[in-house]
Amino acid sequence: MTPSDRPTILLVEDELLVRLWTADELRDAGFHVIEAANADEALSLLRDDGPVDLLMTDIHMPGSMDGLRLARLVHAIWPGLKIVVVSAHMQAVDGDTIDAFFAKPYDPARVATRIRELLADARQRRAEVGRAGAGQLRAASALSSRNA
Image (cartoon, rainbow, N blue to C red; front, side, top):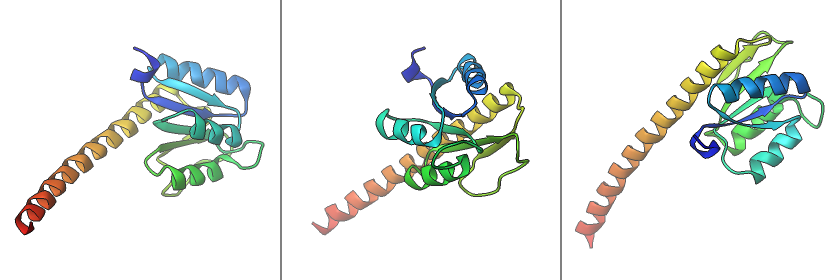
């Protein structure tokens, strides 16, 4: 399986050893992982390196913004992108921009399972929207044919 065949996760974690361990676990679970050490690097990767299926970010990071602010900004720019937030300092995160939260230390198998669920749900919704859009397009074409 090539990286393009696997879902792509952008992992944003400032602690090098945690980032390396998490990236390895996610790769072992079958994901293509792109790594960033902070929000600014993550935004640059999102802007320049092509499609990403899911953002997984720590909350407390150095740089111009923390992970929650990054999540809100990413949700505003790429509303279809799934977002998972992790933290050792918080127990839960509320908000409509976050799809899942895990407290550190987390079980990588549970994280991988939840990511698969989120991505499957996103694919299902895209398929439903595509079918609905195709039906609307056929109806609009039929209507315009009759009015022509």
